[in-house]
Image (cartoon, rainbow over all chains, first blue to last red; front, side, top):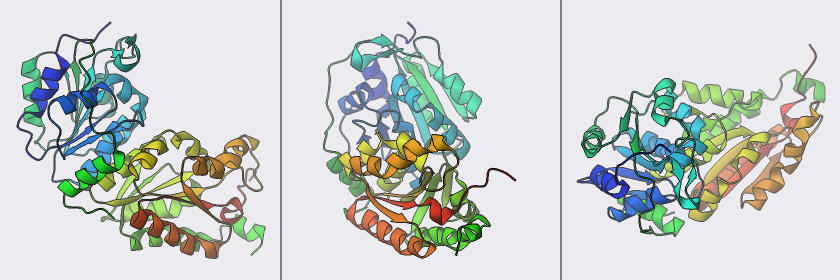
Length: 194
Length: 180
């Protein structure tokens, strides 16, 4: 099945290197573990459920914080469950939002069944046809570094598929207390609990 | 007011009230799947430069969007039809687990004088489905109830990190005309 040869942990760590005030939303499962493995951060919001929602949480955040760069890190299966959301994002065109799809072509969390991406759906091509300003297929670390360089530009909404190996790295679990993660994230932006 | 008056389009005042209450509660994001009952609020939101009006392909996108907006420090509301509640069920788990505020106004189908019986199963299950997922509900069947109930729901959503839904009944909205 498709996917690629990138090491997902190395790719995500590279993407988040020297992240400054980047705001990060993760989809549930392995992408959350990848982001956690790169270092827990108050500017991370980890989803543990609501599959298909990561990109739309990113859109709401990007629209509410237009001065900040927002990065969604999610899996190809998670993204596909909310595919309509890509159309919603495309018509909103938030200039501060980048979606990085960790594409291993499989449902890694549930036994490595082939996913739609693995069976031939190229998510970045879908995003391009929907009207995303920039889309890319990334197959090597130079491509990851180039994507990192785009996170702070304001040329338009971006999506890249990161073609990674279909293997489960050791789980590095983010905090699971949803209220804690929410309040920690908001506090880092200066918002107090109710 | 009798049913004929409602059919003729009376009751647009309550539609304006929906928008006014949201404005008064500092709602900055109105996310929606269109419904005729929400047409006024959607039009006013799209015309308001201090608001983001976001059209969704499906209602659960709105749950996720509003969570993101709240993470970024801003308030929003979801406008949808009762059939959309069914699409939101799993995503409402996010609201419950992280105690995000949720404010939604829901126009009812399958509720009263429904011509299309295919709307009935979800319409009849709407309020129970919301309650099953931890959403508090209020019903408005008369125009005068809309403003106070939505104000109350907004107060409890944003001051208490609570999930709050106001159901706008079909008797309020008026009977849909299928034959011209």
